Image (cartoon, rainbow, N blue to C red; front, side):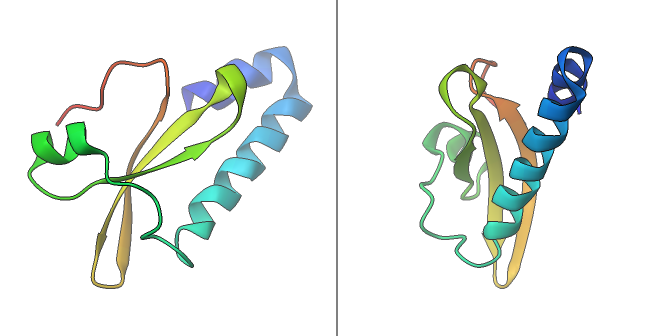
Length: 88
C-alpha cells in the first residue's frame, strides 16, 4: 500500500501505528457496516451501493470504499481523501 510505504519512509513506528488503525477500522465494518453513508458519486458510477468509512485525521484521512451484500462485506478501495474520485 502506497500510503503505508510513504509513512514508513519517514517513520516506521508511525507507519505500523497507522496500519494497525486501518486494520481495526476495516475489521469494525464487520460489526456495523450499515451506519456509514452511501458514497453517492461512486454508487452512481458503479451501479450498485457503495458505502464509505473514514479513517485518520486532519490531512491523513483515508476513505474506505466497500459494498455490503447479504452477510458479505467487500472492501473495494482505500484512498486518500485528496485523491481524485474512485472510478470503475
